[in-house]
Amino acid sequence: MIHIAECPDCGNTRTLFNECPHCGSATPPILSGDTVELNIKHGAPTVEEALDRLTENIRHFQELGIKAIVLIHGYGSSGEGGRIKWAIHDALEHNRFADRVEEYYFGEQVPFGSSEYRLLLERRLGLKRYLKHFKGGNAGMTVLLLGSERRSA
Image (cartoon, rainbow, N blue to C red; front, side, top):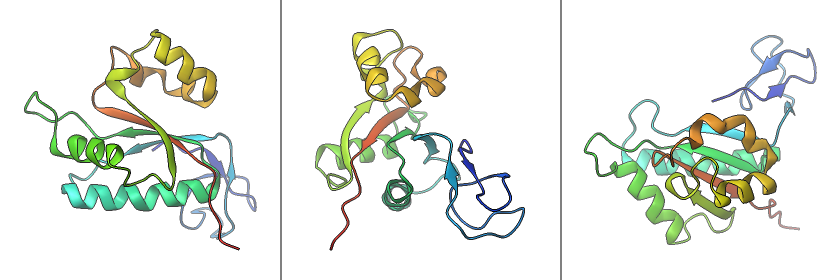
């Protein structure tokens, strides 16, 4: 995951979650962008663990004001797509994250230079930082555009 946050107390770069490793501050970080990369396959989770991790991260990212996630789920070694990829696609298509994800784009739908890619970049300029992931229609990633957080009164 790319670090896009700064500690408001000491000014050092830090992760989005947990305390600042430099000064121990628990104050929420200051964001330097509205887009993050999340490698959901890191640590070889089971499908259910990956879906749970994604659910938790979407909630946390939205609370911090993140607008887009470049989700790295991998393609799988079978050549037909991995179980995590297909489970995430299925969850998105069946509205599992509909309360937080406004739109999603499977990597193979937005290859670098395509009209879909240009439109997506116009909507979320922060994605430009992640150009390397869009080469050739990357089937191992999905872009999630988050909606505004729904707070209950």
